Amino acid sequence: MVLNSKEKNALFQAPIGDSPKAKLNGNSIFWTLAPAKAPGLSWMPPNCVLEIDDVSQEWTWQDPFDLIHLRFMLGAFTPDEWDDVYKQCYENLNPGGWIEHTEVGIAALCDDGSLPEDNILRTWAPNTIPAAENSGRPIDTIDTMRGAIEKAGFVDVHEKEHKLPVGPWAKDPVLKEAGRLNYHHWASGLEGWGMWILTKFGVPEPWAKEEVQVYTGDLRKELKKPHHHVYQIA
Image (cartoon, rainbow, N blue to C red; front, side, top):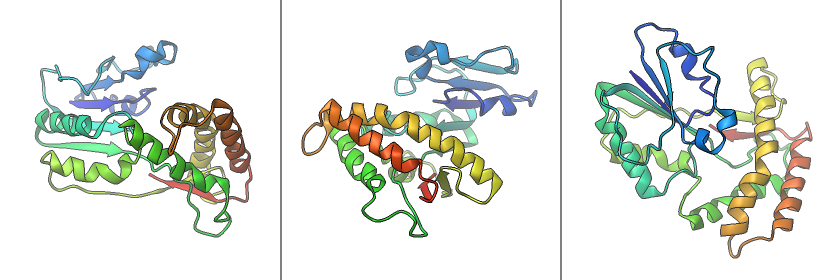
């Protein structure tokens, strides 16, 4: 039995659901905020159940899971709430079960010198990470999740780090396609993230709406430049 939490479109769980012995629970609170984006059910395997729930609350599932998959939940919880989530993951797994947590770092990184040190893209993480910390819901989850998972009691913890391109600059065809998709993720999400974090919790003081609009517009301009070989850690 598998629990997949915070998956917006259920693409992850459908392939696993092809196994007739597997039972999958897809869980997201996102669909309550954007019901039009809830996945269609016509193509979902019959052993895959989609649910709207908040995993930071007390869990009510009756049966334990063999795998709990968490993905892209940075900024979702306070540190104490993360401790509670991981504790409930630990308590709701079968013996020998696994937790899998996939996150991304938000820093724009570059290894080959194609992104100057003074480029505005390099300011995104220094501006938003302190603001998110100020909000009480940190977004550096990729750096803290291992310690929190071990704190909950998990052992035999493995960590894999990948470089996820931002833009289609990679030579490898798989990474090129991933980078193309990730570029659109960045370009479409920058203003929303920045508007929420920076206008409410900006450090040393909140930003004006107009400042965020200009700032994120400049970030998008730089992202479009194909000679910037930018990636993020995933």
